[in-house]
Length: 143
Image 1 (cartoon, rainbow, N blue to C red):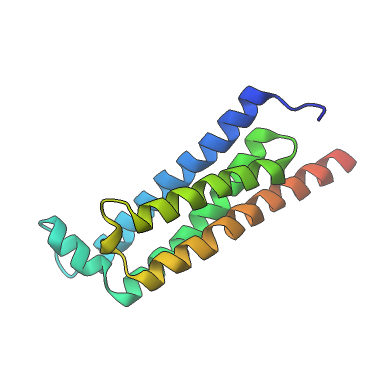
Image 2: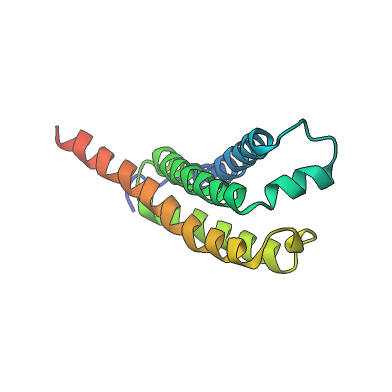
């Protein structure tokens, strides 16, 4: 494929995963802390607030936003074959989520419905973010 640089591809895919992780963690912390009635003193209090249905729905929405941004960033860095790069990042992220939600050390801390929903929405959101970037690149090249 013309213009494909293996190192750039690696940075794009791993960078997308890093963006998703960092943004997801920051948004989770903000959402949980803002939903708490008082400052959280320990992990048990944090998990109690995080386990509320409304908070979990907010975290799911935040996951979609983070995945959209991660997909866009993956595509932007890749520069070519944006959807292929996003698909690779999404496949890796899906594998990481499934592993973490099934055999990971903290798998039981998240309700099953939330685990399933997170796996279901993450890859399509990453793909959608990359699609936006791919369309933008095509538009820029034609103007």
